[in-house]
Image 1 (tube, rainbow, N blue to C red):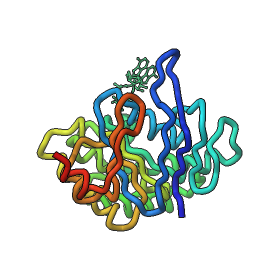
Image 2 (spheres, rainbow, N blue to C red; image 1 turned 60 degrees about the horizontal axis):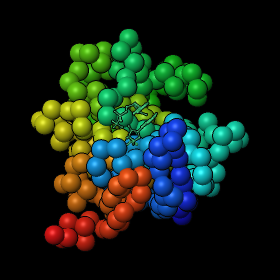
Image 3 (cartoon, protein in one colour; image 1 turned 45 degrees about the vertical axis):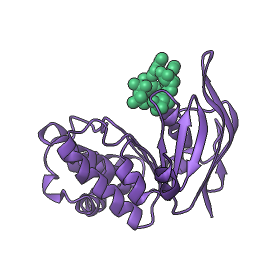
Length: 229
Ligand code: ADP
Ligand code: ADP
């Protein structure tokens, strides 16, 4: 099936056109890496997939539901799409487990015990169950990013979006985050990853998309992409 259909999508910030007639179809289970220069619209494009940003022209369909302002079920679709940001975006005043349980308790109305069980399961999945009682500031960047991934996974997303998840990390922490993302890919997660990590793209991506000036200017499977001079 098709997880995400982006059809003729355009978007402007004021007079500046950030997305130009973008078309992209992502199959269920497909791993996409989006690369391209800074300012080319990569972040805006993936933010449109969970409607953190609104497109102004074209259609975006996620798991069969078109995303439009006022779409019935938009909150449900949002929960199906997990997102991980460059800057982790953890709540600094909440410890790790509470960061993970907040949405489960508030939005999903899970009982505290059930929410904590889901959180521990996902903290184990990203290999930091022992950090559950720590606060974000007590963790390394790599650990914080793994918490952010665990928090997203707690919502049982069908699609995961990653926006430069390793760009704010020291080199020695990049690998531990990429390892977690690689494991998710191995589990069959549908993923759209904005990243400059070309090793990850080569090893994990089914397709690499290159953006420039708000357009998709090239698409290839990694073998083709990396054989180009
Ligand atoms: P990328 O992820 O490829 O770096 P972005 O999607 O973040 O690109 O941004 C594309 C362009 O749009 C950049 O020039 C950026 O400054 C501009 N931009 C991003 N967000 C906004 C905004 N909210 N208002 C105005 N311009 C924006
Ligand atoms: P990144 O390149 O990491 O995606 P940016 O530094 O371009 O992020 O933007 C950070 C935030 O500021 C984003 O939420 C983006 O939408 C917003 N932003 C970026 N450029 C502008 C702009 N020219 N005017 C208003 N908001 C902007």
